[in-house]
Image 1 (spheres, rainbow over the protein chains, first blue to last red):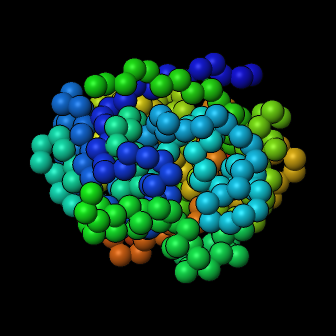
Image 2 (cartoon, helix red, strand yellow):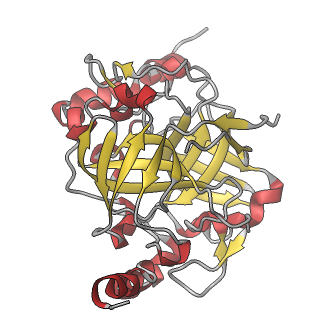
Length: 173
Length: 173
């Protein structure tokens, strides 16, 4: 039997310097120097107690600017068409984003984070603590990603973010 | 500005032997011997291409039997009240579940998995590949969980699953 629709309501908003998907790093590990904040709506702030003990957290969010779903996609890290569920591409049947970001600190209902690969204004659905005991699995087979070198992954994973930074920092407009 | 509701539609169903929340292990690492299947609805099956190259996948699902949301909760691993977002408890404002399971194989639209800590009949929302490059972060601070010993975590994490198995295997009814 098929369940019907699932309705979620945002619990907060992610604020970042990323305004354009095409210039946003594709994963937190390619965005270590990108800081941002998570604004948790005040009515949920009590749930943040104890979170500052964690160095990393999962953010689960609505990919509000994702393109229409597509079941086959060329991932950012490789020019080969792959099944969508073997990628982290945003064109998913349910545009649900997930990032493991570093938690730098908390002031009330605001979390300061780094490793931000998330567009500014993204609606936040959930926060879960990253626990190495549950989540760090070192000996995995990583599908087509095992064919991509670290160097290539880093270059492609940052997308146009470096260029943008150089422009921001170095150009006179 | 607050975004409005986010509506997702299940892309499949998780099948497991877990029929009761109270007897379901709390995390895949405490359920290594629990096998199950993921039935992806046929219209999404094309998106599973290449997934068998991964040894582990994230399942994101609707915690359809979760209790009402509560912002403070005693986690299964410790008898101390904690902020909800510093735990993986199911009583979340948006009951969104996440498990990293081992992928044993695929036959068409059916994935065979182990490490299943998910109730039978759970509506599936998304599948993402687990990539050590993105997801395995060994040197983390793990909040209150760092106070819980491995032995204690294992005992509490399996909940009543062991007892149930002993009853299933050993008792004459």
